[in-house]
Image (cartoon, rainbow, N blue to C red; front, side):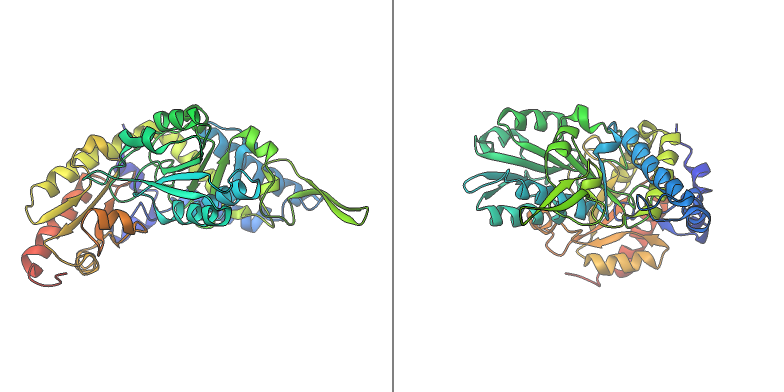
Length: 412
């Protein structure tokens, strides 16, 4: 069982007394991550894959080790781990790779859901428009959960891509990835998973889950900002051409009969254009090592226990409206809610005065909020390994205080 109080000691920011419940946006960083990046920056930094001098070779080895560590964490191979700036860029890269390799054409279809984060909605809308394809959108039920029972009606012989979120950043709902992937493969579709809220909170093995590409961010799993991952199944990474070119992506460029001929590097390098996030990769490697020492099964179970308590305590307040499923078994670490008709930003500011850090707004999921009847957004509490029951108690006490003192103010 995870010892959240012991873990707190590794996070200096918590010493300020803040109750940090904005983990779906970005997590805090343990000392070991900061120290690993600082040590590399001060003592071992050089550009990678560019020089044959000692520290460049050592930096290159460390950067490659980071790919290996991340691959082990997600059950993949190092050549399948492509470093990007964040999940958003990773999903853009996935969409542009599909488009650049003519895997999507006029009359073809891309299937997403109404619950998608904009990072997994806008790229597919864009490439569908460029390719002359149709973007189909799976509807939601009353709790904001995709209607997977209608999946077979939305899949057709023209479906080329099925892209969906692993865990919703609003409702906390966890999708049945294996079943969706299996059904998508029956019509020959590529499966792309937005796992920005998945990888940090639950054990994953993308290969056994049946997906073809998956994206996640370092800063949502104890790592630094400026680094994300696109995992791409090995056979696809080997055969597909990258949509972005430049330094580091090519083995050789030459003139042949008056034309430029390109020989691409092997993956993952052919997908990592330009100088990569070297220092950030070192931080991400330490972050996955930290989480591995805790055990992702323990992380998931800890969050489930806290989610259950949070739902129960907020559910006792008749002036609190909870968005999404009321059962903790259908959620993972996220509860979005509104307080007595108050504007979410106003409520969040009032909670901040009580030392509570939560997210407010539409959380880059406008359509989902519209569907749930909250067009101005919600207050979102999201949990992680350093949160304990006392954090939930402080949040609920603060919600009660805010409503009793300001219930008539800050209305929509």
